[in-house]
Image (cartoon, rainbow, N blue to C red):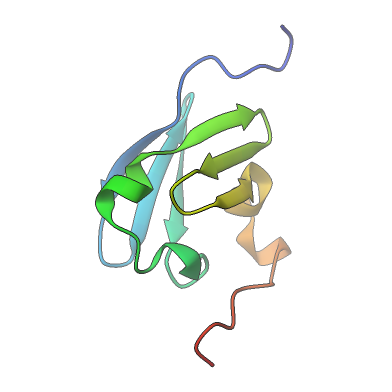
Length: 85
């Protein structure tokens, strides 16, 4: 099928600043500052990521659905959670 992803997403590294995810041959950083929903997540919750559609990733335990484009270009998606403010 044209445009379909060929391998499962893989979280390759987690640090106190964020985590890196590999999609096919592209590795992207999800900084906790830009993606605060992951800040208090466990390693297991972050590692369990699904790729239900070419343009979206889903973390079922966290109920987080992100557009891949928002990871590639977070500056184009300035809305972040204001929880706790």
